Image: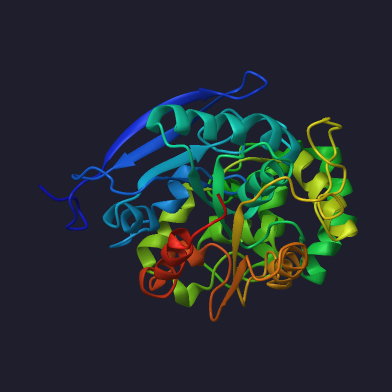
Length: 351
């Protein structure tokens, strides 16, 4: 029996885990008809979305591609997931409490001594923080998309972080791109109006609000020509609440030019570019050359930094014609991007 895409359906198991501070999160274990022949890979989503963001209505998603090629696939719903109750999360909380617990859960379930990770946007930033602090020593390869240690944003985003964010903080603790479909309060209606006025080049109201919330482009997180109509419609249910507390931390990181911690956890360094990495993991950095959320200079700066620490060990891929999330759900991602990701997962890492 096949699914609506003509593929054999994948089996899904929800595996709950408890974060270090007691918050309930979960992993989605995805398996095909055959037992995996390769080790576990954990996929970590970005801010205000969920694990399902890796499973757009495409003929072949990154999840399909990994399963087809023998990997044991685990999707992490960390505290930024819209499948969990809204909460004032920070990158620090995720780095200390969520990702180490998720990795340990996968390790216990599989018996594997080593794992690999594919991490995106703020899932990338927070997971990289865990790795650099030595909190996920089981992970030997980290494929990072869009941003990791050095957040570089367009001038318009800097303006929003520095000038608009203080006003937003006064009126709402969360922003929510889904307000493009349903704005339940006066604040939500005002934010929706602002997004509609400033991003008029699309008839998808959630697409407009995503761009208003997360970047400076029109659209900010993908190129319209890279995604098909079904995916463009599907994103309408894939974005939800994101706390203003996160944007406050990102504003501080952007001003410093690198990730900095804000919650005072003793497990984390104050400055992630100043402290020596407490990991032997190999980093494969990906960036769309047309990304208008985090500029490709973000990953280039991180590659240069990591390459100074350990010469010719890490890698960088700047993807022509791609933006931010269309790296994973572009109409041609299975042809252009997924083979590069798999090649990086299969390269040897230090033992």
